[in-house]
Length: 243
Image (cartoon, rainbow, N blue to C red; front, side, top):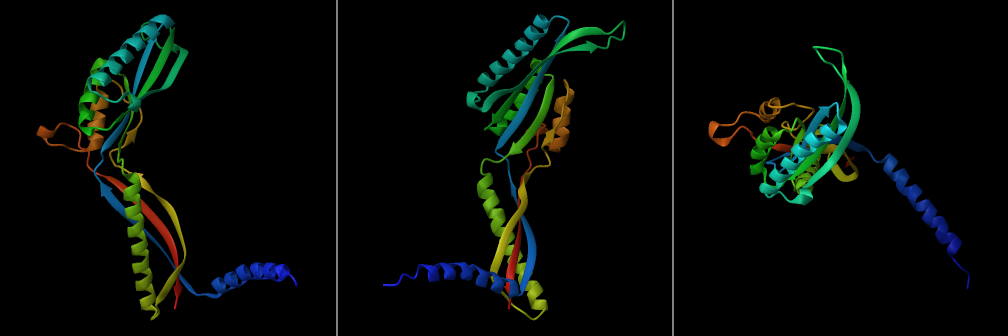
């Protein structure tokens, strides 16, 4: 019996070429579409910073440790899960402090950051206010997030695909044509953002006022932080056959 393997190999090699040639000759209509889903955040990520400085390294470290211990005690008091708290930055460096009443003075500056994820957003304002009162010197950033990002992104993708089909239908109709099956689809961009997110450095009591202004106005009876909504987006490119 003669083996047919060489012939089968030739067919396998030719088939992709035929399909590619058909695709190249099929007229298409290419559209891009985007969609967004508005979501109320159910999680807050905040990074606190503690900065101390003193001519004595030991004194600077002691001062820093005292504030950090108070912050960690506050975290326990608010019953925040230890798994959602992390020391994510430590820096110790000598620097020359500008003394307005005399020559510059060499000091040791110690910085330490504590990152916290709040699963109960109602605790955010209390945590922020009390942390500043305890001596936290920096609020490096605040993110209002959703724990169901995947679900909302899938919904945004579905809406973007539907918008792409409707756009293609409209364009094809103007040409007295119809769209056929989708030939290619790709996603670009997408993600999530919130107008209330901010990153940077704020010091002392100024930090609270800056967070409030970024968050928007709130009624007098509801505190100073308005969580608003975050936006989950999806964007797609789709090529439909043009019939």
